[in-house]
Structure formats: C-alpha cells, structure tokens
Image 1 (cartoon, rainbow, N blue to C red):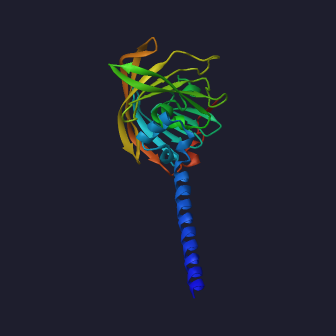
Image 2 (cartoon, rainbow, N blue to C red; image 1 turned 90 degrees about the horizontal axis):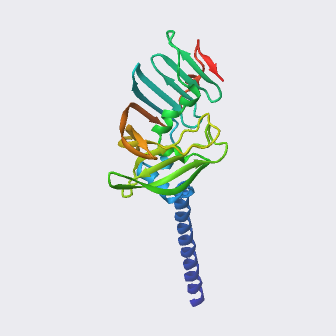
Image 3 (cartoon, rainbow, N blue to C red; image 1 turned 90 degrees about the vertical axis):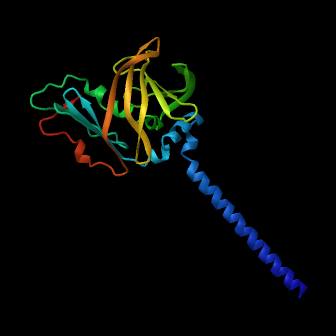
Length: 265
C-alpha cells in the first residue's frame, strides 16, 4: 500500500514539474517573438523607435499619404511603404513611380522643371523619420551630440551598405532628446548625381508631432540655415495635413503611368 501511495505521489510530482516546465518555456518563447525585431537594432535607435510608437507597429503599415501646401497649391504624396511605389500629385504635374518606371504628367501645358529622379521619395523620406532608417542595409553608429541653444542631443549616424537605395553614399544623423527618446533634429548630406560622399550636412528640426494610428509622425518640420555643419537659424517651415497611415495597401493602379505622361529615364 505504501508503495502504491509513493508511486502515485511520484507520478503527480513529475506531472506537475513537466507542466511547470512547459509553461515557463512558453513564456520564454513568447518574449523572444516580441523582442526579435527590436533586438536587430542598436540600443540608441531602438530607444528612438520606441519613443515614436515602435518599429514593429511601423512595419505593419503599407500606405502613407500626406499633403503639403506649395506656392502653386496643394501637393499630395502617397507611398506604398513596402514597394516604395509613389504618386506625387500637384496642381501643375503628377510624378509617379510604379516600382520600375518613373514618369511625369505635365498638366495644362505646365513644364515640370524639377529633377524627378531626385524628388521621388524625398519628402516621404523626411516625413517617415525615424522609422524609414529601419530599412535593410542600414548601418548605425553613435556620434558626437549636437549642442543647440545650450542643450545637448545625442546623435546616431546612419549610413548605407553599397548599392542600397538610389544614393547609398547619403548619410543621416538623427539627434534625439536623451530623456524622452523623441527625435529632435535630422542632419543629412546630398550625394544624388555625385561621384563621392559629401561632408556638407543640412539640418531639419522636428519640433511638432502627431499621433497617427499609434505612431508619432511629424506635424511640421523646419529647415535651418547652417554654418560649419551646425544649424544657425530657421529658414522655413513645412506643415503636413490630411495624413493617412494604414495597414491596407494602396491599389497598384494608383501608380501606373497616366494618360499623357512620359517616362523619365
């Protein structure tokens, strides 16, 4: 009888231990799945992503659209965040990219005088900061802080592996508030059409943010004049309205070459 009772007790004890081990394993696996994306990034940029709602949530989004006021009227930019297909629709032109073909549609006889290859994706890139630097092929390095009006902002230098994007020699520096982690400044170089890297940094201040679908996105950005790779005084402000950030993908037909448009080579 004692042997039977001992055997029963031993069976129950082993079963309880097995169940407890299974529960602990499940918890560990769950935590690993939640942290797998952010673990790919250095601590400093992860802090910035989290302050703006998290890179995991951003990666669920497929459509980004915003409107800017231009001298000739409103300009609406819509981007497929996964394919980077884009439509920029203004009063005098439409600029589109369907993933392979870049095209321009000049409206009512208005000549497009800009550089379509350079402008495609430009404002989207500035607007989608800081999440846009979470792309594949991005390199991160902590750099010297920016000191402006007696406040110090830690910096993260962003560069690209060879062949990534249209201008892989471009460099960006995200400067953020050390306490909150929110992005405050962007320094950037322009290498499009050039044969070598530039050391000339331009500056944008990110001073106002909006919560859109659980993520902090810019309400306004301010371009600054600069000297010796440091910002000096505000030059102009760009405001964004009618912001759409959605998990639903835009229809491919939106980016197809319009009737009367011509291809940019």
